[in-house]
Each structure stands twice: as structure tokens, then as C-alpha cells.
Length: 178
Image (cartoon, rainbow, N blue to C red; front, side, top):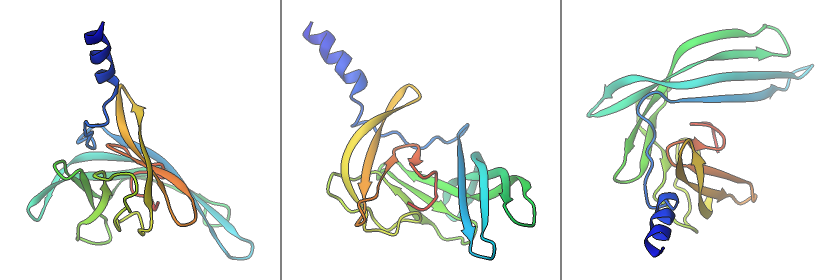
């Protein structure tokens, strides 16, 4: 009975197993919106899917290319339009350090995107998608597919809560601002 309970517990308690980002066959469906303060105000909605599409070598590192397809529309002219397979940057992982790096289309320099080597009470480093001042309030796990991935619940000075999830991104998307 003891061995059965021990084995069963180990199957679900995977917080010590690092789950890196996928290196193929992955996509993130996201929607963002913003308002142009004109008269009358104009709301813009961008619904898109990010997906991995092959590898590329930049400098001495191999990155996974990210492409973006979707539809952008506005409540004011001009009308919306579709876009397909636009280059949206590249990511690479340092699995030993549990960090993910991003090269956005606007620059050729690598920036830290995610740091999953954190403990409760740690402050999240300045990253591409986080301005800092965010701290880890708790750590748990969430079921993604058939595996539990470590989830870091974060708070900032305004007590706004969100999470980053190993191998997935944040609750705001792959690289949207946290």
C-alpha cells in the first residue's frame, strides 16, 4: 500500500520537473484591444494566433521562429484586414537556467522573456514583457494537456494578480505585457 501511494503521489506532484516551451507544433491564440482617443473614440481589436514555424540561427544560438496570423478590426475607418504568417520574432530556451529569451521584430538583441527559476517572495527580473516590481506570491501547478506545469502567481505594487506558467507563457499571452 505504501509503494502504491508513493508512486501515485509522484505521478501528479511534478513541481520539480521543468517543462520547457515546445519546440514545434505549438500555437497561442490571443486577442488584444486598445482605444485611440480621437473623436469619437476608436476601439481596435486584434485577434491572432502565434505559432512556431521552424528554426533559425541568430549569432551563436538556435531560435524557434514565431509567426502570427489573424484579423485586426476597428470601430472607425479604415476597416479591418487579415494578415497571414507574419514574422513575430524568435524564442530560445536555456533549460539549465529555466529561462526563455525573445528577439522581437523591432530589434536584433535578445531579451529575457521568462525566468522560471523563482521562489515565493522573489521579485521577477526586468523582462521583455514585465517592467519589474512583480513578485512571486505563491507557486502551484496547473494541468496543461496531460501534465502538470509549475505556475507562478505574481503580484505587483497595485496588487494585480496574474501568472506565468512553465512551457506556456503568461495569463496575458506568449509575450504580451504583464
